[in-house]
Image (cartoon, rainbow, N blue to C red; front, top):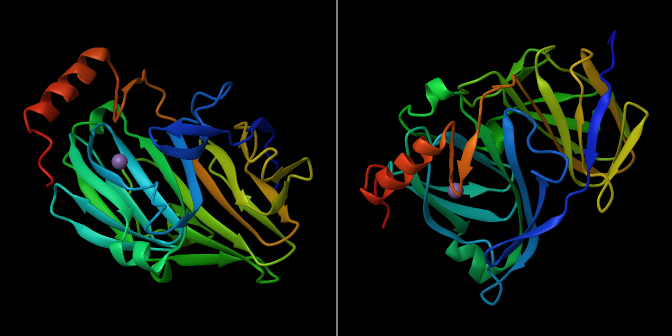
Length: 289
Ligand code: MN
């Protein structure tokens, strides 16, 4: 690697309340509005799920104008949507919804998982769509963990799953609308790896657990800095895991457009938000019982 990127921002992962749900939200936070094209990152759990504790059960709700993505780390969720999809998402799987002009979906732990009990943990990521794609037909993709291609370091103690985009010739199975890379990284122990990033992409790292030193400059650790973003001034970065760790690497070409966001809709203007609310009420985003 010729030029290592400079770290631009770092942040913790503060707990926020979303209705009855308590989760971590590194984007947006004070100081980081978005890391264009990534407009929201929620880290939920680990929750000890049982019949008496089931906080993360999202009933039917709409979306328009972006791509809500779930990366499940622990547990098991049932997804249903107005396109007629119904699928069980297991730990390590990814579901990638392109809301486009509108979709209604629900997600939460499966009934069997709630009865059995266990830990639930995941990432919910909102990837923006450019204006020209905001009203495209909705789409749903579910990729199982075992089907994703992986990249490993020389010592084979770091495994990077390519969810979307590509790395070192390994391509993700998710069909994306914009140029974006999503990698789920798991380290078994200490280990070092270099990751290249396209010159025009914004890039960030979010740590779920463990301890990772980035560019020999900043340590990501739970309860301290858990997310960092890079300047577009180099061709990649390197990291050194200090112990067993789980983290997420995201990069994408910035969309660089005005954002009007209200609740579950991400558009370019307030008028388009009003239209989204009206279209949902008129049933134009479909139905989910
Ligand atoms: Mn949703």
